[in-house]
Image: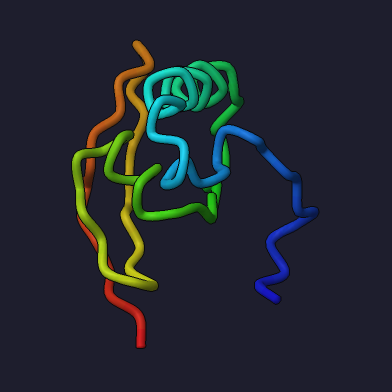
Length: 85
C-alpha cells in the first residue's frame, strides 16, 4: 500500500494484450482521460506493458516506472524511467 489516496479503476488501463484490436481505442480513451484530469498533484497509474508502450513508446521491464509529464496543451512527454527491485 502506497498511501497515496483512494484507488480508482480505469478500464482504459486494462490490458489489451489478448485483444490487440482494442489498442487504438483504448489508448485514445486513456489520452482523453489524462487530458481531462486536474494534475496539480502527482498521479500514479498502474497498468500493463502493452498500455505503457502504446501511450509512450517506451518498452518497460516488469516493475519499471515510466515518468511522464503532460504539457498545458495536453501532450505527454517521457521524462525518464526508474527500475524497481
